[in-house]
Length: 113
Length: 113
Image (cartoon, rainbow over all chains, first blue to last red):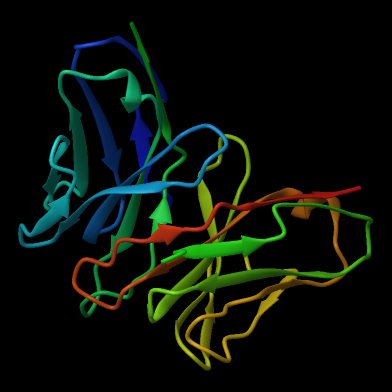
């Protein structure tokens, strides 16, 4: 049930764009995105709900394709502060939200000057 | 607000010993979670709680126990520690709203030798 993230790692120069993908084999109710810097706790970035609602970081965008059970996180004009490991967390569709996430293994993003 | 606090930050246990990881949140969140994070594996849900007195198992509950007597506290108990429980443990909380972003504590790094 663990979602699959791709790529596993990506290296960018400052100002470049990146896309991180998250794919599930199960129908999803929601997808969450978090970023974790080395030695720190994960920090919330985005939530995307089935039906189109979303809440998140003003400088980061994401999409959620319910039919394909996939989500993508778009990082544009990357900054050095974007470096870290990005995790998607998926919530399986059921009768509404069950408030329980399954996280992918993460995508390591490195932004160089 | 302090957010989510965890103690201790680091701990070394001998095989067979027991200990309790403490977690407290001051945001009046109904939902609380315990995760473990092993290198390259993402976050695995151990137990979660939807309110005081209500707990449920996650993906990897074996070897752990929890209780939730108050809204604020959600301690995780390790009985008969084993080397396989060496990991970083994160506690998180979230509001019981449509967008239930999770707020993570700083983590406890546990080594069992």
